[in-house]
Image (cartoon, rainbow, N blue to C red; front, top):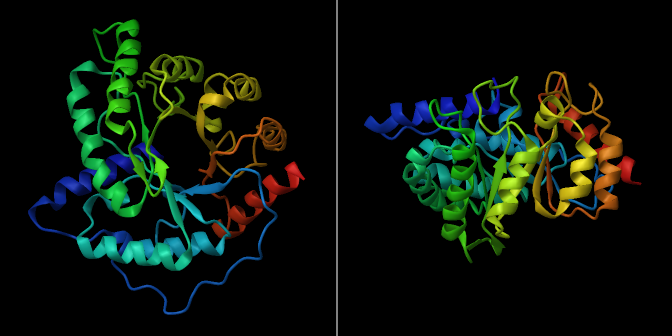
Length: 309
């Protein structure tokens, strides 16, 4: 299961739950009475590290997943709309667990509409408006958005322009808006053509061109290194040329979307380049561990610190 499939599954669950309020399975079970074992503090990194939650601990209730994240030594976390079917009590339990463990939710995803289809523009903007409520409740200051699939009968130029126009409208909605003391940001992400051959925005170069055309500090590019290695490569060159518009980086190796060091991407060089470029925004681990998830996440964090040291 990938993140797009995971988001669609959540959306289906939300539709199914409209007849009666059903608590999310992620927080339905009671949590452990004992606090989780904490990993030894790792060396500091110049940019903060996070975890995209859909990739790990999916068999546990939500609060226990947060405990595992803390056990792995992370204090930032990204969601894919896991809260979509939560009750008010579910939100309160999640907030209490987050506070107890010192975890920040730095981004979320899962909007049902993309920006490449002008016919769904109003639906996209309405979904974004509705997302502000859970974002504010959980103090999530960034929303990841997608282009959506190619629209039959619509030219590529028209879809390219639709992405620009839609993001400009989104920028107007977040203009001057802040959550938890941080400006609300819109992060445009590409998907590689192997994962979704129908997807419109497969090129980081084109996505960056769109973000530059929008020309708003609260609209940035999410640089997913896994997707870009498959789609076009030249990972470091894009960092050097476009670090100013990169608002978030996602990490996984190719092939397989597993932890760094299992595939073909030289993450040590990437980490060193990011330090050299003085990147200070978030980097999130979005890999599916081959073995024990806590151990893999700890190792991934240590690799960042060691490469930069």
